[in-house]
Length: 212
Image 1 (cartoon, rainbow, N blue to C red):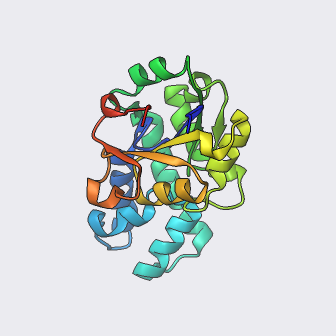
Image 2 (image 1 turned 90 degrees about the vertical axis):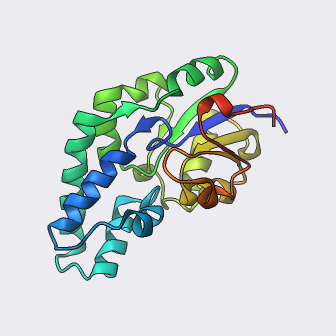
């Protein structure tokens, strides 16, 4: 099976932002007297839409404000952090320069348009990918539904089976599999036990073998 296209998740794959989401988690939940339990909560949030993630936390911790109010609050916290602190992941740019000549490339992210814009304001990622970006705002269902990955394949003009997804989270791997795509998982956010659904699990971009 040939690989004609590479579809990149954003947070934790292209952009070094997961540390910022942890900071935001501490601040957001701390306002309601709740401790941010990264190990228990983060695997359920990474890749999930803002609405779905906030709804999960609201139910789990019994947060009193209306859902839309909580969404706006959490969004405001992370937007400020992304605008000032987003960086490219170590090893991404050399890998990208190597593969962009031989593969079609796109970003497919659980970020909303507003959140992606905050990252893009700092990193100019949309320019790097030639505008080939799909956000959760552009599809009906967020990860683990396959929508963002299927939309990326359609945007690039390839069949799902000819696309390889690069992910860092369990929900993203599930979404890739639901889309009928192969998946490489980077251990940038989680250890191998949580990424076992991927076709390859690697510690760095240098370890990715596109011939597999």
